[in-house]
Amino acid sequence: MPPLQPLHIASIIVATIGAITDLRTQKIPNLLTFPAAACAIVWQLAVSGFSGALVSVEGWFLGVGLMLATRIFGYPFGMGDVKLIAAVGAFLGPATLLLVFFYFSLTLGLASSVRMLMAFPWRQIIAAAPLFLVAPNRQIWMSMDWSKFNQIRKSKLLFGPFYAIGTVCAILLEHQTLEFLGFAS
Image 1 (cartoon, helix red, strand yellow):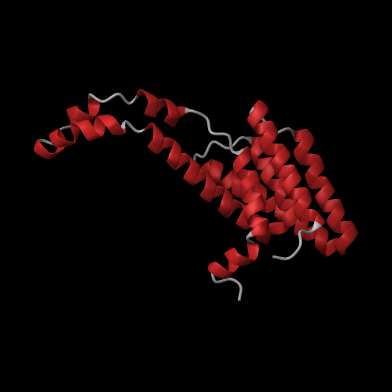
Image 2 (cartoon, helix red, strand yellow; image 1 turned 90 degrees about the horizontal axis):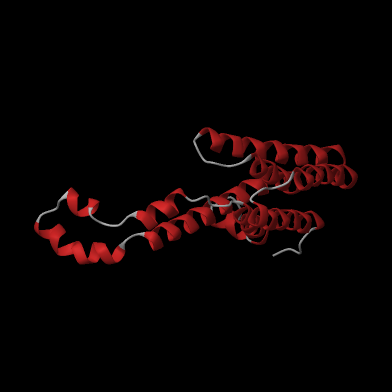
């Protein structure tokens, strides 16, 4: 793994602050996202010139585009989520942002699945297993207590921590992930 670049460290810091504020207030503030994105673009302009700033702007727009596209398909991302992933994209550029989104999706899906599996009425299903084998009936399912499962299913899941995890994983595992997916040699 190559050493972390200042832009990597800055993106991890921004994503972590976003995760902490999301956990504490259930909001990701503009005071974090807009200045962070502007700093990333100015930083790239100063270090890499116009082409670096262009990559930063592309990363920002890709972040906005990815998140808005997922909102169209019904995922309940707030606009703070959109601006945070866009700010991370401004630091990392479009290629690494795709990895951030990959790891974000992977960890969010895993956490959501674990939450749902833990809320499933397993004891009731195991107790009713002989009835399922003898006469599969919809009434058996309806008689089970699904309140905890429905409560978890309807509860809000905060996305900020998963952006931070996705950012860290994308940065630390970038080469290994690209190699595994067949994009690097």
